[in-house]
Length: 198
Image 1 (cartoon, rainbow, N blue to C red):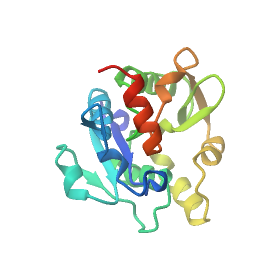
Image 2 (cartoon, rainbow, N blue to C red):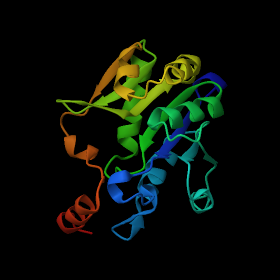
Image 3 (cartoon, rainbow, N blue to C red):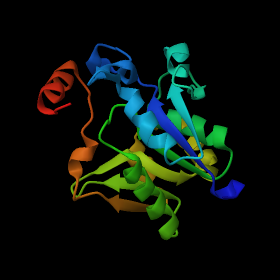
């Protein structure tokens, strides 16, 4: 695989998790494992290199054995800020992104995003569950970094709006929408712990 097609995976763990009482979501245990560990397992199976985007608990995230990159600003500007940092880190090729709080999104799902990007003549592939987009699951051309930087500098933060401005394909995951279940609150965590067997 040449430099232009190398895949840099980024696990997005840079948020404030306001609904989790500002606990660091990626480090919360689900089935006795930190949430981020599920994403690490999926991403490292697919990407040539993987980084974790985090703005807190940097040393703890480094214990997962991967480089940790932070947003370029200290204002917690959302997932796009983490994706931009990964694009700068990658310099070229493809950036593959997923959040740290979706333990059911696996390596084969990430591979499907990559295949969607490569099969269609587009710059972005993002996930669609048959009803709505899940735009923080995406594969994109790292050369879009200037465009994304301009978008953020204009004060824009919404991932879906930026995605729609690009040449994009929606990868169809409508047969397995439950892979997008994520954990946004203590109640959701408790409910999933009860529902899902070990």
